Length: 117
Image 1 (cartoon, rainbow, N blue to C red):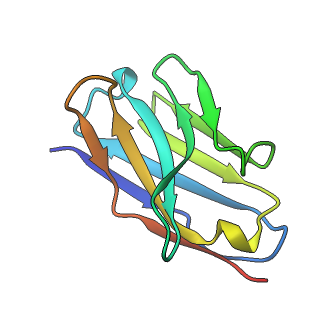
Image 2 (cartoon, one colour):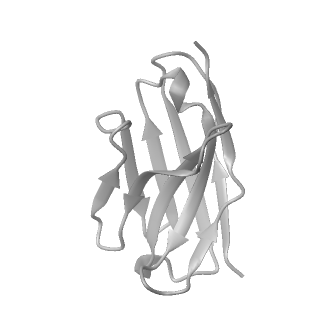
Image 3 (cartoon, helix red, strand yellow):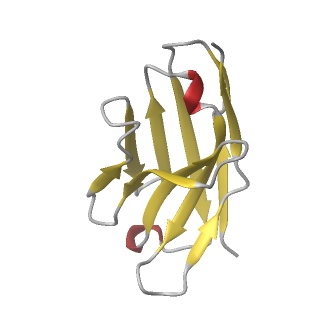
């Protein structure tokens, strides 16, 4: 059974840093794209960062230069390093595993990130 478990969320100060981690199990990790999404109150869930199985990355414009996504295939984990945090980064962050054009898409339970203003 596929499981994605996020950790590392919590409270952060303005301009502070936080590191999220997602541990995957029940999948062949090296073949999937891994992403971080977030959903703030009253807003749609949005892509924050994505890393493909080949290591290519993509970021939302709002986080470019501040967030870094990375994957460790040996440990079946993906991390999101968040620096220079802003109040608008406050949201529930979700880990995602997927394969383009294939009915394979799984979500973690989410972890709350709150940035004080």
